[in-house]
Image (cartoon, rainbow, N blue to C red):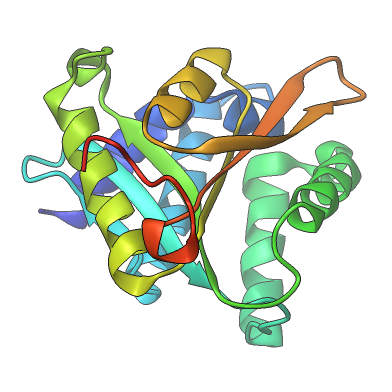
Length: 202
């Protein structure tokens, strides 16, 4: 599938995502800012071989295999962060975003590899509790967790997503009442091979 189509779809999904809504600065050209953020995410996912697509591209996930203390290329990372700072978040949001990200990262494993679901979205007309696209995407990345024998971590600020995650065998292990009044839920999926219950539907 054409990369620009994927970027457009991720940008549209991000507009309905509380975490993205909070970091993308308000004002003119906001659609352009969402698209810059979407491009950054998609290109990083392609670079890391972390992009998962449903066959028609109606479902999109970014699933990183993560190693604690792994270092990115300093200069490349700095350039990317400055681009996001100028064109997406703005300076006003920067310190709050960094503080929140530090807290989020502290909830993940301190040692041992794990999978991290950085993004999971479905285009608007294909959503719903009985969505075939949603089930397909879920099966894809849970099977990766089972195959690679790695726990899978995710977080969400949407209560209904917590219900969906738990139905798929995720456990809720932490709840964060943020200073801004929002709540973030932290979840993890432990494969059966690691002693977890797994997804009963797999």
